[in-house]
Length: 88
Image (cartoon, one colour):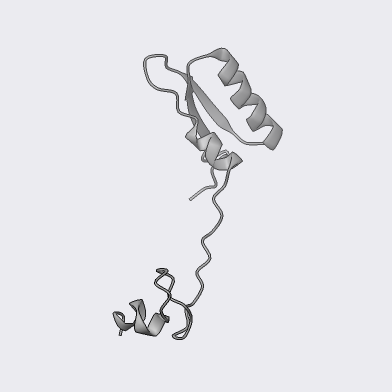
């Protein structure tokens, strides 16, 4: 799948005003992203594609829990005596 903002997968936004369209166009041009802007006043604005690129999610980091570590559920017990006993 192509990267969002590329020529094959442009950012698609729906706006109500020219000011919002200008903001989207300037932001995309500044970053070199390809975009499509639609004016649809009868539908809600949708700039979620742009927001995804401006605020990317950080990848989740999973930490392996040792048997003698405190349980992540917050009980204060060791993992092996709490939630870890259910996974055996």
